[in-house]
Length: 276
Ligand SMILES: [Fe+2]
Ligand SMILES: [Fe+2]
Image (tube, rainbow, N blue to C red; front, side):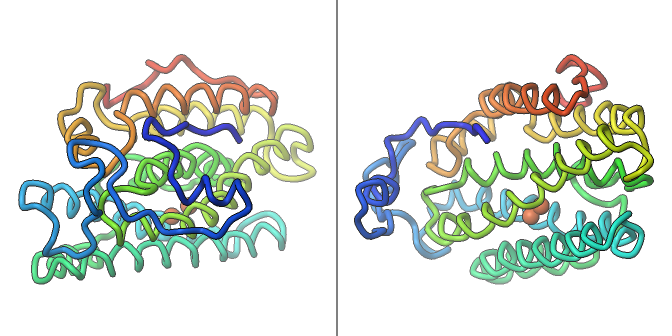
């Protein structure tokens, strides 16, 4: 899978891995206005103007993890094959672990963090922050398109946090990323099987195409507004590597190739969008 390339210089850890050496944790901030300074390792060290943004990003992240458990849950015993049911159970376990991991980082922010965790645990279907996580999976094609498109945006968001300036968040990324890779590969495989095998597997090519039209615009919305001040500040603080628009552009390039290889078509990027 071709993914976004960082603007920042290559992380020393990645370099030493390529050279066959040992992996050294990256201790300094790699981009933004504090590049070169030691990373923030505790909540107390995070500068006050940046604290609110770190908490906000963690809350949104955790909210998506818990929401997707609610969306997948009905398919645990409705997925078409035994193997699909098993993968559904793995995805649910992975998302629960991601939610837990984000909440553990939030806990370090004391009372403020705990208040957010309590709210997150109360949220029911339809009450989540992003539209993509308030939509039900009515058909199996929804599960395929959601994991193919929406989980893939999740991977872009996680990559944007890789080696970020807040050490505990940066260190949570590698395992989350490897688990997310399974989810999105599963999603494209579901769509591909629907196109190739039709009712022998589940559904039809037309159903898979309808699911593309339903989920792709919601996935593009997840990157946020094109001229977002928050996204610019996140880069300046060394938290995120790309602006919303840069990440969205790279994502569109990647999924265009993928979707045509499956035999399906993407609508234009402006189609049915809510967040521009
Ligand atoms: Fe996740
Ligand atoms: Fe996922």
